[in-house]
Length: 356
Image (cartoon, rainbow, N blue to C red):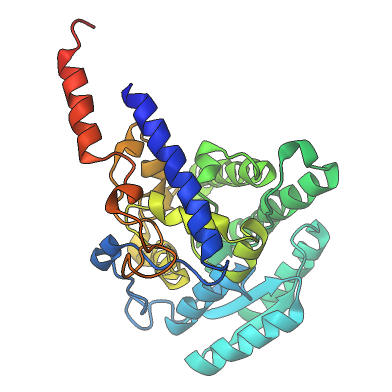
């Protein structure tokens, strides 16, 4: 009975979620939930100025989104950065903007990480520009939502080549050179929380990201003796233009995401950049082979079998007033998965149960 009540309430909430989302006009981002006031984002660089002075950093996919944010913070902290991706015009614009803001050189090099020969040539160019990097961030990725029964071999290969093979090519090419030159370095990979759990509709990405994590943990064990560290960040939902346009083209996913994030808001790229800079710095010199989940508690919320019993309070859109459309006329009960009356009923039923 209790499970049935929860399922009915959950179904109602999902239906109301879609109705409300459509009524909102499919525009803009949903505002954060009330509890987000306890978890305000601090977006300035957290490490001391000069933390990376005299060091070089290579960031794949560094022209946009999370890569741009990480490049910005590393450059602010003194690193000479090299950003690489396929779109040189985008890279160069980003490099000029960041360098102009921080006063530190940012180099832009075109690279398709799927091509191992191109990776070798690019690494040679990086070495001539800055020397072998002290920090390597494997951030380049490709992903899209698709029912697995509709996946083509080419679609699978495209994602796997960028995410897993591209990361391996960059990591192994640089790692071998660093070992030969007896130079230490910090490697960081950006994966996702579903690399651990798996996820339908993004199966190539889930498989490839899981492979990246296995690669990094394996190399942390094998290459630590050469002074090389390998760590991983699993981000939860962070709004970036490229990711959201391919993974949430209708906006429905974002609209429902906040309800399963205990912190009540999406993450910020600048927050991830701070974590990345820490993991790549000497402040984290004893961290290697670590996987850091960075998701506002989303994974824990989704993993708990009974978490759907929570009373979520205001609907995930969290309107400033229930008198504002399209919420006018709805009661607090419409926004709760389990009402106080239902809790009392379930408690009564539980207390009356005898035996195992």
